[in-house]
Amino acid sequence: MREAVRCQYLHAMGIPIWVPRHELPNAAPSQLLPWLGEQGGPHGSELPTGHLPNYHHAEDHSPGGHFAAELLQHRGTSTAIAETRGNAPAVPANVLARNPATASLKVPPVEPARTPSAPLPFEAVTVVDLTPPRFELHFVAMGGGAIWVCDGREQLQAMQAFALRVAAGMGWNQERGEPLSFRWPFIEHGKEDQSAAVAEQALRAQWQFFVHHGGRFVIGFGPRSGQWLTRIQVPGCYQDGDVFSVMNSAEQKKQLWLALLKLPMEQLPVEQS
Image (cartoon, rainbow, N blue to C red; front, side):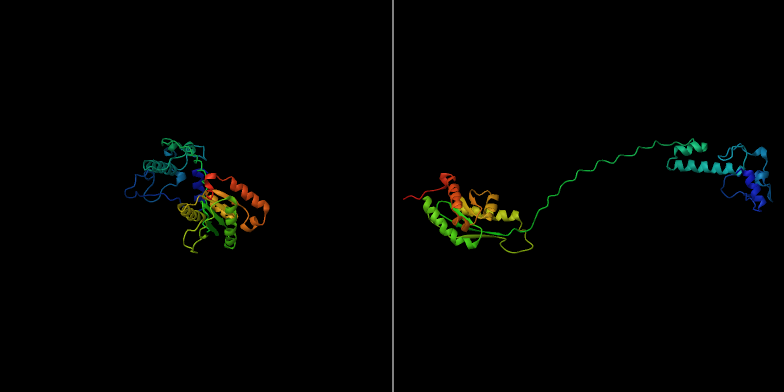
């Protein structure tokens, strides 16, 4: 709507158009006061046309319009310049195209959007099982460096008798030591680390004790002895079955005999007659 038509609508509805008639303190000189008297004056539509600026409004392509529009435009331009001097945000290019008054402002170049860097590869976390393993091994040292071992205490007495017969049949030293048991965990304690790694360290220390007293290899019976002693790389031969199953099976006795023959000869000291 053109400014003159707007003023006519307001005048017909009895709404006066407010125009400042006194200069405010510290304000810029008004460009309307020269045409206004101290006691009233012409309405915006009655302003002298000779003094109207050649203002082209975005929605009114004809020259003319209220002179206050130029003042508002002048005020907006001054504010935009002040904000630009105070490091205000840059004016977009499409706003410059619609508003020629801001065409003199410098628009800094827009930085391209940064592409987010590729996410770091996921590193697999090794989960350590701290559950204490539960097992027991029973050892009997025989002459010549042979250490016999079984999984359960109920097999210990039978293993000692069987070891004597095997040593006699193979011609080995039949000297027999006292049985020794290894149990894990030693003591039930919830605050101490009793994981499989610690169990291996304790069992390795137990084997070093046997080595210090002449132990050189083991003859193991049962899955537990084969599992834990091979984990700490103890040389010897291991039977999957327990002592009772080997004693009652001719096939397993044959397998044990063949395994004993494969051991190095220097590890099988023959008893001197």
